[in-house]
Length: 518
Image (cartoon, rainbow, N blue to C red; front, top):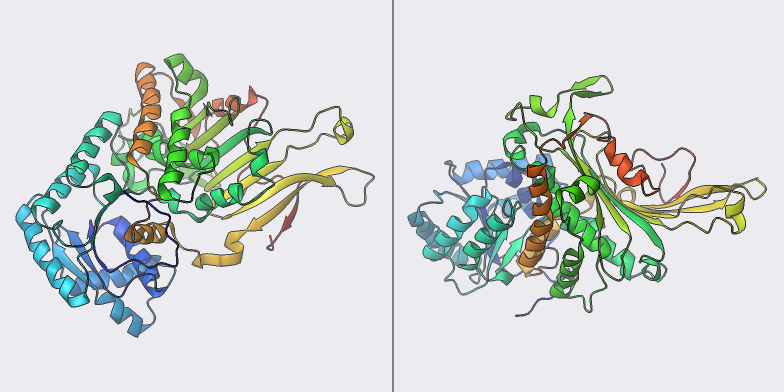
């Protein structure tokens, strides 16, 4: 079994891409635009075909019309080159499919053979399941029984989160998939791992000599990871009320970002070596041993009615498809420890929530302060040095240092030195789904989650969920448009820290030195 981190310059081999759920929102907003961007940039082999699969009837012409509208609405490129567009759309066909009927899969296999001949494809198959997790197993069995895994090329399965509801359901789902696909053929997408600045964390850490020697408990006071959303549950109320922030965001996105920050340097730039180091972090997470532990270190919140500006916002229980007595959390904050030699004693504070004031995903690394009785610290209230990694919506990094205030007699003022990647590249920065589809087509599993990553993440999360079931009265409420329950501030205050402002909420007394006009 061989895994590699494959250079971006190597294009994928020709393949048939099967998009299950092709009439759904994910395909329209993310998958179709990603495929067009890859094609326009020459990152797809000309020997490819895309089969859109869903239950509702569609002709090829209707499907291609939907494709065109999707790209012009959501893609970073426009389909304004008629010659390029016509060549691209010829590779797309549609088939109405009942995923519970194996005969339909046999018909799909016949169509696949025709596409192989038409586009000179060597039997490679990539199955993208933009479906409910409960359908992953049945679809996999029918792919096998319908003959689609008997072609001469490679076969890969790409599946979306959530991967299960808890550890037992995830184990059952994994056992079903392993009856059909090998682990190295399964690509579990967490789209946050495809984001530019999440992938850049490794480069920032391991390619800069002045960071890695300081990246430990001797020099870092705490790490803060924020993933805040301004929206409520919108039309996802039915799904979200059964999931909540813990399962929807923490088990995947937040723990993945934590592993990228805390992992050891891999021995090689091979996909499995990188994922091995991430798993070591998850194994080192200090599990909460009791309900008291969870109550002390975890904040569970739900937004009530509130406002932003003059706009009135409903409470979570007033949202469509949400139980009027629901105790589902829309906010999660926790103090987490990674009990290994590098991070022993360093708190990682993580928070995520809906209906917060700013949409932002950021990682703040706060370094330990200078000794209070040394030099400038005797006369000045020095700010801690910070390294801030901005993931979304702005992309970039900034470093906060202390410097002499211009024109003063040794007065000290904090200064932020910023690299704004979004300002430099603009809207044409590759989207996460482009990178991940491209990687899956090339067989590069580096930024996909392996089964043992999923299992360890569920083990950590399940202890919290169990404690919440035992402590039903521990839900905190916060007004929509605020920064969450007051107890989330106390989580840091009791350790002598505070949540640092995220993008859009910067401090007024800081001088900015930036590569872009602010």
